[in-house]
Length: 507
Figure (cartoon, rainbow, N blue to C red):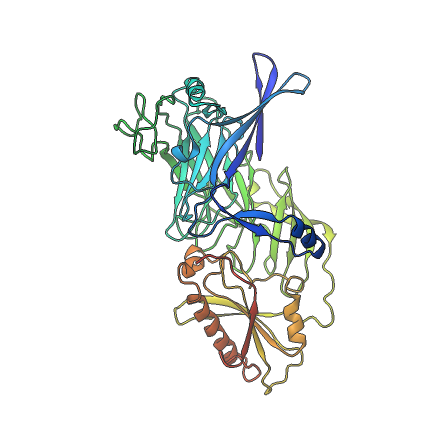
């Protein structure tokens, strides 16, 4: 949920809105739900709970974006609250949308914004919705028409940005709308990470023109159309009925801030930090190597040089201070357990882009590795398909040259995950070290389908799961067998074991 407050000058009271996603699950089948907890299961035997679930062929739940409006007096006491919905049904205004992936408010509270996805998850729309487009939930069609009369004709949604992919769209949180300067209410500037343009996730500074149409929201829907009648005109169409792209805004400017065959980290909760005083944006990415995450900074006003702030040889997870003068890094490598250090950005305020990170304090030092822990070794090789892949191998602790040690292949094999990187593996993947301590050679390979190598690399398994990723795993095992000499039994498929974790249904 998201909220924004603004004063109401006439009464000096305040009005606040909270936007929320609304779901109707009634179209989904109901299934019994059981608990794995014995005590809980016994209780459920007396009263079975049911859950509504869909599948790849069923309809999705009905969705909508609604507002809860609160009015408070001068003492801050809520004196009135009501739910509001769009002036026309959500599925009518946005007939191709199946998912509301993200939502929030612009800086000044003038608009709620939302990210809409279609069912194949190949088209994303970034939409602005003015609060005036929402009306109190009506009890009848007659009441809806009366409420719709109060909605100004120039109030409507704005589709300010679209992303289209023939693979899929990886949804993320990076969207930073700037405040609209006085006199420039007809456009909106924002920063956005986009993976669809080049196949690699990069930052862009976008300016969209908020061109207004005009609608009579009391008009009924025309037969056979999922959209509503037009009133007066729409600047981009001479048709009497609106087209699906009627709400689409022209892009005035789209400036790339980063580029290249590497990624700005956007998924999995990654964020950016924008210093509007200096015109700099800080982000995390893989510019130097796909095996390490680093903190970088670039100017969004005069983009060019991308400056790295963290130390090579480790993979970092960072967070910047509110004053942009310090950052904290949780970092490690395959051979070094995690530590947490605070760094101060020192240098001239005349050249903030090139400030240097200096160690300032330690919040946690790296612990010593257990005596029986031996870190994996990272390797890379090129496949017959001319694709460079990375892997890592845990050597058996009782390694004896000339002896055939049993080999285990650890696999994930799906998108959204990178197993092989320069971060410490002695916590989450300690079980792999345990296997090595028992005399096994353990091999891990990030084949096509893993993430942070670009959308084409990750999407190679689309509609053909169990094909390209298996080819890569087999080639990787053969590479290990050839490069390690005679101590592995990695002659797939006869003498290698297989373990791992499951992939979701991405095919």
